[in-house]
Image (tube, rainbow, N blue to C red; front, side, top):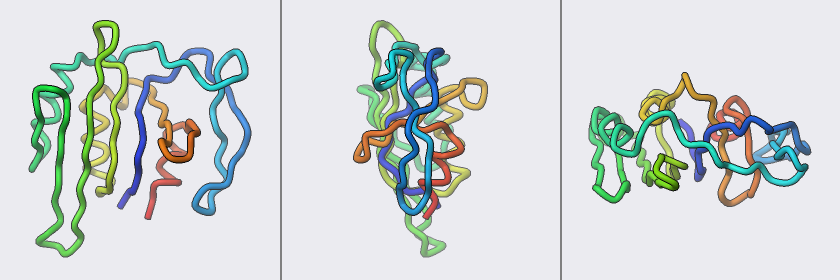
Length: 145
């Protein structure tokens, strides 16, 4: 199971390694932008807003609203309830970011990422509460319950 509250962006071309932080017992390398500050997320995801919505609808027990809000839940029959709330955000004519909050099994998380072009597209994960940006492998280590 993964537990998270994150914004998902396309990896900027000028991203580099930042300071190491300790979160949930893991030492994780953060990402910084080309100027040394936070990364600037100007790229769009490889799929459109509408294509991401259509892909999300292929996930079992998924509800997607026209404004980009979506919700999936499951695990009741196994006694391991999970729920993910999310929102697709458009900016400048393209899908700019995806916000995800909740918990879910890894296979469901992979389906969510697939809806926005993963694994073809390299993604980064901005932890909302912690205010740091991580690469996928470090995000997955941090999000594991």
